[in-house]
Amino acid sequence: MSFQNLGLRAELVRAVSEKGYDTPTPIQTQAIPLVLAGRDLMGSAQTGTGKTAGFTLPMLQRLAKVEPPKSSRRPVRALVVTPTRELAAQVADSVSDYGRLLSLRSTVVFGGVSINPQKQKLIRGVDILVATPGRLLDHVSQRSVDLSRVELLVLDEADRMLDMGFIHDIRKLLALLPKQKQTLLFSATFSDEIKKLANGLLESPALVEVARRNTTVEAIEQVIHPVDKSRKRELLSFLIGSQRWQQVLVFSRTKHGANRLATQLISDGINAAAIHGNKSQGARTRALADFKLGKVQVLVATDIAARGLDIDQLPHVVNFDLPNVPEDYVHRIGRTGRAGREGEAISLVCVDELKLLRDIERVIKREIPKRVINGFEPDASIKAETIERGRPGNRKKPQQRFSRKARAQSAHGAPKTAGQRHNRPSSRRVMIAREEEKS
Image 1 (cartoon, helix red, strand yellow):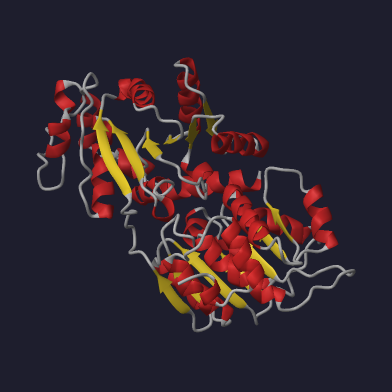
Image 2 (image 1 turned 90 degrees about the horizontal axis):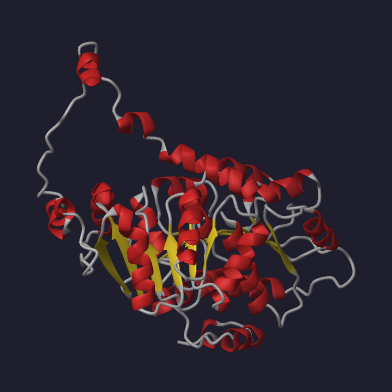
């Protein structure tokens, strides 16, 4: 199977070939003919499987069938909505690269940068608009964009948009679009929430699913390195130096932790940079560009900042901190092993993270191999054997100890547990995502 066999026009086949791609991936083989036929589509594929080209190429071909006006302001005919700035920029790059031989205009709008240059491009007119929800609604309110003539809508990483709290923004945008249009919805998973959204949006959609829910890319070698929390940074520096890693994406659970780790790595003689929601969009763009060019050896990122990062042939991903949400582990390690290439995902796990590790292994339905690094053996109480004993079915119930205050409170009713007090990860994630995307 080739791209030409999928029915794509010569200009698109040439553009794809010049990007170095000859054979379409499974998601492309299945999705492209359906989109060309005008079908609504629900697509599910792991990150790195060529999903973006799967909707970008047929979208360009359908729009190119009608010659755009040369003088008058062009209406937005295709709208692609993504959850993050980085993903929006990458989709826009794909549209530009694959459509460079066609007479179509495109642009991207997202928060964190000045709105005025975006307004000028929109007022001049574009055929294809890639946007994040918050900034797109800003343009709508300022009347710099008209969505009433959109022919094709793409919701990319719809599950991420719901997780990040954009459902109300999405519903506002949908109300501005014509009822008669082709709609493509892509998601890593088909959760009940996604199915509910699709039922009210898509018309007899075709279903393309090339990966099971929450499965990890088979080409990725996964390993756990047990280590004391206080020695994680030292072990990371040792691995980078001894293994001569040249390009490493490291995940930190917090913005402050990302900054601190990047500073510590620099003090170890390793060229590192951090990206997260508190960084300006310019700083994030520069750090990512330097990382891709090899000027920055280690990029330390938080989950939200790293969503949608597309880095060709990224060999190593390190979980410096395990994620609180086990599904995020799948998204994290999906940054490597892309498009069938091999990759390595390393997690530095301390005793405090054993429950998080068990949750991850339950989600991916496999046990991740544990390997202790000589010289970095955990304290006697948290060696690899401890991690083994901590697996489901092997756990012993720990002896409970109560403080004097806790014993006194128990006489008047049990106090709230830590989990009851803080079990609101989704609300916090929504708040952070909205603040970041709309800033």
